[in-house]
Image 1 (tube, rainbow, N blue to C red):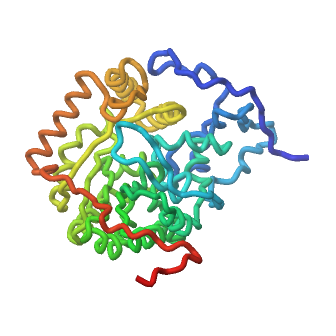
Image 2: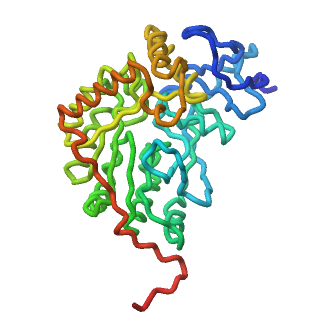
Image 3: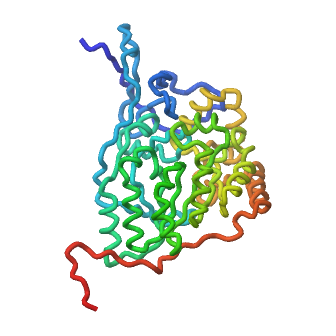
Length: 387
């Protein structure tokens, strides 16, 4: 007889709750928190079923102490056999129309990651599944080269790292991102990278050569200078000190660098805006940006759980301020304001950021990438020209 049991419930619809901050869950029977030992080193506190699933399954003790036998969450990597690697978008409030994600899911485990809900499309949880059940695209470099070789392809900057981090821990062995950069360098194609990992310095050789031709720039997100807060909030990302050192190395190699104070979380890390910018400027950074905390779909409840588990005394204050900057809601997805928020508190954060940048000489000039060097890769079997 099996000693492990589960309980299946009809999955409740995902709707914005109307209860005030701090109120109990409207679905108390869906207690999906995972024991600390099983999720050690992870960001999310729970592993609730995705919103597209017909049933929600939760573990419960059937009297045989079966929960004591459940193993800790371990990282697994499956293959993503995508036919194309370039993803297109037409969002009017972001500065790129195409991107590449070498991986689905991210082992960094940042609790606030707005990409978490994408795991629901795979039938997995945006919680612990997102940071432990990963998907890699080993054919990404070959697929990219094929897409760049298409006769109708028009080059524009490709953004990498805008969804999941291309330099998360598994990249150290798989080197998919390095293969992508090799293709882009050969083709003379511009690329902008966003990461939280010091592993990006591994590819300084390629990035420096590309930067000399205005083909590459790198942005590192520094959420906090407090190592304890950073480790709690971003458990498997590089420490703040290593990120600042990576910015220094990239800058010294002539690669245009940007520090991203992202996300700014009121009453948690917003007091560090000026210090983060100052540290980055001393590391040689010339550009900076910030993004206000975003809580779409399942991210809202995951962040709530994390906040209650780690900073319960700040819970009410944090969400009160978030709603003040989101028109009274936990999140407002409206284009043009979703990144910065609205209202007096959002204005004050923006003004503090601008004043600090002005004092430090940041954003005096914006690096611009070019597509003038683009040379379409030769398709397999294509005859070379004699002239």
